[in-house]
Length: 83
Image 1 (tube, rainbow, N blue to C red):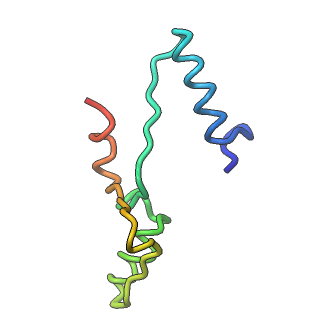
Image 2 (cartoon, helix red, strand yellow):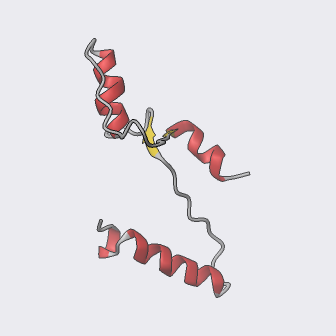
């Protein structure tokens, strides 16, 4: 997955960690489960579950039912990562 400046997520994380270890930066790398909520309009959960239900249709869930999976509600995410 290419991100801003043509760097991939792992490349950005490696650069960030190097700068933290060198004492040049105070930072946090926050990772989370699949997102859903008001600021995640294009998330899989919003598109295939909540919008479908709101339209009176059956929800679709693309997960392996025998493996654990979690979702993060976007308004809760900042509270999970700080304080």
